[in-house]
Amino acid sequence: MITFVFLNPETKKPLTRIQRSFKTACKNADIEGLRLQDLRHSFATRLVKKGFDIETVRDLLEHYSVTVTQRYTNSTDERKKEAVEALSKKAEVSDKMVTEENQSKLIH
Image (cartoon, rainbow, N blue to C red):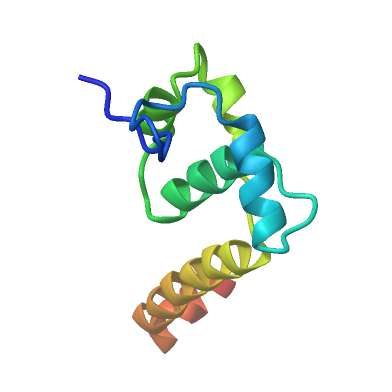
């Protein structure tokens, strides 16, 4: 069963073409340049950031292929920093496991 988010306030029937309503809502909220498509991009990016796999995101966006879905996900500077820090933490643990004795064996 499909649940509609937007309803006509007078008829209570679902709005199946919401482009004009979206533009009006943006205008009323004093938001410029936001497209309905931008919400799909944000949705996909936030799901990936929360750790959901690309196949699940693809299914939710109803894309035919993962390649299309990948165009919707954006890597943020914050996410890139987290990735590098995660590797750095692993390296620190590995470094601590290398004793002085093992270091001399590795060097020679």
